[in-house]
Length: 272
Ligand SMILES: Nc1ncnc2c1ncn2[C@@H]1O[C@H](COP(=O)(O)OP(=O)(O)OP(=O)(O)O)[C@@H](O)[C@H]1O
Ligand SMILES: [Mg+2]
Image (tube, rainbow, N blue to C red; front, side):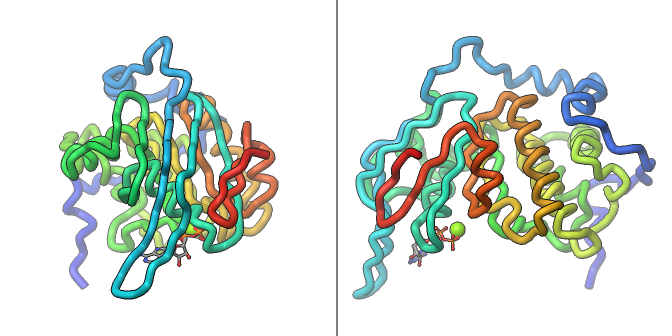
């Protein structure tokens, strides 16, 4: 198979550095260009109290004679800065809900407002732009691109946003350092452990400085010790990056470190 790994940049050798003690420390030690880019997306001093407001949210899958009503008329309100867990049995619609809130899929009925955007009204092009700028998504099975190295996977959203290859690589390397994987930059996903892949997926989700982090079972396939380290990292980046985070999980320990837990079951969403 062709080696695509050089198509994203110069493929420069990467120095091995000790992992940053904390995410905040790594961000502080970012090169000036990365800091400047961060300031290009300032957080408002007084963000609206509800960053996400969904009303009458309904998702029905229909094909031929089959009809799956996942949920109807849900109301969801998430405040700016909250870290919320979504729990519920398999098939309850947790991934579906996350996809609707992040604009990866469209609701059958209802509205979703995220900050100043009414995403139910955006065109496909504007919705894609909204996702690239505002949302960091960690998928249920990471979905790293196998042909590309760790650093290239992290760079990808920036390249899609037309950043220069050099700026994207600098930013991606600073994030790799922040998640403790600077010395794995040139490894492909197949050469990384499950926990390391989860860290790369987290770095990729953060690379474009989103306001909202959506994570779908970020530690679903990891052992308890590795999961704990990813949970700590999630909590740390949530705080240091001033994120609003929604995390779908079956992991009770992860749910307990969140500010609030939403239960989705039998088409109902309840707090508690
Ligand atoms: N494209 C689709 N077409 C039809 N039905 C679908 C589609 N995608 C999901 N569903 C159905 O919608 C329901 C909710 O699926 P979803 O993936 O959101 O569940 P989940 O709560 O994330 O489950 P898990 O914990 O197993 O990941 C399921 O019954 C599923 O079969
Ligand atoms: Mg799911």
